[in-house]
Amino acid sequence: MAAPRSGPLAGIKVVEIAGIGPGPLAAMFLADLGATVIRVDRKEPSGLGAPRPVQFDLGLRNRRSIRVDLKDPAAVELVMELVGQADALIEGFRPGVMERLSLGPDACLKANPRLVYGRVTGWGQDGPLSQVAGHDLNYISITGALHAMGRAGQAPTPPLNVLGDYAGGSLYLAFGLLAGILEARTSGQGQVVDAAMVDGVASIMTVTMGLHAAGMMGKERGTNLLDTGAHFYEVYECADGRHLSVAPIEGKFYRLLLEKLGLQDHPLLQQQMDKACWPEAKQVLAARFKERTRDEWTALLGHLDACVAPVLDFDEAPRHPHVKARGTLTEVAGVVQPAPGPRFSRTPAARPEPPAPPSTENALAALQGWLPQERIQAYQSHNTFI
Image 1 (tube, rainbow, N blue to C red):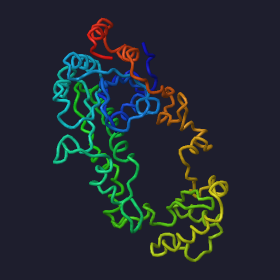
Image 2 (cartoon, rainbow, N blue to C red):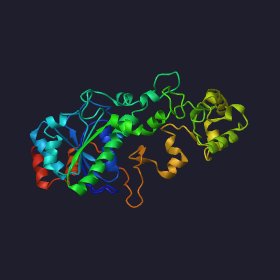
Image 3 (cartoon, rainbow, N blue to C red):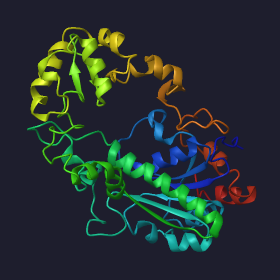
Image 4 (cartoon, rainbow, N blue to C red):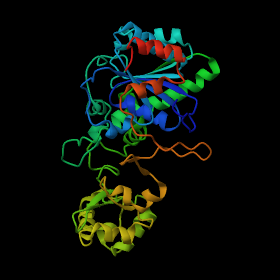
């Protein structure tokens, strides 16, 4: 039997119906903090997403899986037995797919009335686009978020898929599941969590939309305080071709930066919030930062309240002194990856376990603590899972 997980979510049990994108990462977040998650995977690969060797599919860490054919009634029966023991379920199919597999919310809540049934999609469970394919970039497009990203005079800049898939999707699903579990412990009743990426991204944009409504953020990207319009909230190239992030928004931090750069008396830099001065002020700072290398500037400014930090690549980031001191990145089975977060003083999360390769041995270990041994043996003898 696998050792029980430690962390603030120890004792919570989750059934994850394998998918791509936000579902697996939401399951990882819960498993990182101690939840016991069993992943129900396909017997044959789906061909979706970006296939890679399992040791690098880091969103699958901290849990084991069983592989089944959900078109097999015995497999559906097995999953229903797991559902009967679970606090929550995660699925990320298009609306209606789970219902056609006889594993929709009505069936699962009948089997386990306290179950919190988590559904994560891009468009949501209803609306005119609910049955249409899409990806992160599409979901952030209709919320206004993508339009706001980019430099002046240029097309919107597609970001990595962290905003839609993982912030608006994974984190909102995990948040919704935990809220539902807390409520179910009081009411004894489960419910469905509809986590749509469009809704999550819109929620994340709340403060930004407030700034726009107040007239403090215009629709023309690259001209505002936080979108590369301001000279004091920008990324600058240094003498070695590497970059610094520079973000002294507050006046006292801005004045400190100018002092350390020897530019405290430069006339273009005196009126920090005068947008008319920003383009030329940016040229002044760009020229100054080109005078030294990134690491030279970091040594001068990185420990001060000037709000300056080096822009590090994936290989450099683990070596940064602060990242090392915090243990923000860790190495597990030879692969550098983020440590679980956030931190807990009394119930810390365990060190991550690497993604488990699919195997009968791991499937048997995954089922321990979920089903009686005789039920596991019965399903195994009929090749219901592998």
